[in-house]
Image (cartoon, rainbow, N blue to C red; front, side):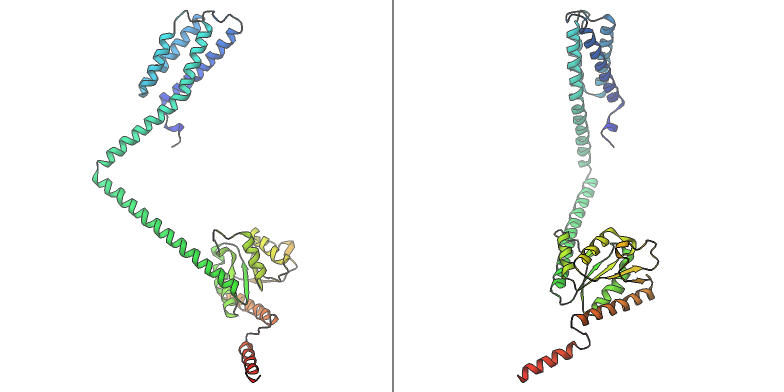
Length: 321
């Protein structure tokens, strides 16, 4: 409920009366520009002013604003038929200022009294007291669980970043943040990275409070391979892919085969892998990414099939020398 809706019909009538008093104020100002200040107020204006003030006094009394009503009553006592234009103008000005600043305060104070009374009534009911206490306890427990979960998640993400930064071979993955890509991530990209011995980091899986654009840029620079899923032409994906290209990376670009969006002009010249988001499609994507990663490993001088053999030969040579 808005503040305005909380006002009763009487409150609204008081507001309208105040607006009418402002119109009378303007009339008196106009009369003063043509007559002397001590000129008597015209009878028609006098009766109109008396009627308006009596009406406001009545409304305030009905609403329970008794102290405010007594103030209006004092102003009414100052009103007489011989009142001058300047005195009437001053009287209206004082009343309008009073209604403008005092009435909202009175309204709020009354609301506070009502709420305090309602709370006092609730405190007298033991059944409700127990319910409130139980809800407060449940809320406290939930807040504790939330805080613990947040801390655990932060630690898990920090460990993930450390593992990525310390790994010998790194893959930085750029994908839209959408559950529909979970199978592509888990069954295709992540599984392929694990198979080929690459530590992979997916940008949208990191939500640390300290994680900023500069961190993303550094992780892209560290990466040996960047994989970007441009399905849907997601703006964030395109921005990060652009950064990778600017840093001289040769990304593995993948795209859903039935994507209705056109391939952006900026990446039309890049070879990309089309995939279907089905069981067989993900298996094919997994095999294709493995092939690319294996090729990268060879470029890095770490052929997976010969790595152990090379380490053994190097050890033997060291022992002979």
